[in-house]
Length: 175
Image (cartoon, rainbow, N blue to C red; front, side):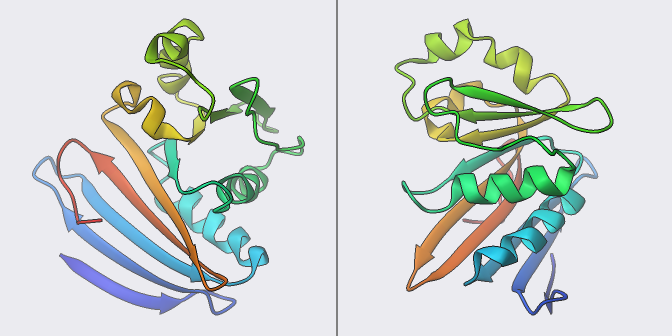
């Protein structure tokens, strides 16, 4: 395993762990600590750079942890000019990118069953090759693809810790 720490351009501390998996892919885990919401822009830049091949991103965190705020920064980094808001009641929002591609933003907090997610066509979205940003993925975990990025957000004493890790099968760098 290869590990390093560095300070990004505005001093956001983050830690990166890399591990080669038997199929020649790379297991990566990045941890950020930030105390200013403006720093999420740089965290979004790193997520979209390091994990650009894994377009399904699952966001775990308590209510109010900052999932939608971070998703807003990611969407801006990807180039949408659309207004980004939580799709709590509609389950999915679609944002256009300048290159004709799309971002799908899901919020499964109010979903009542896996069948409801299947009926709305979640499989088609998750396998579209477009960016899919999923809030409350624990409600549909059985439907997530084998490869996705797991983002966990925790806030303690006004410091937000964001952990990003590509998920592939059962290989783990630990939580």
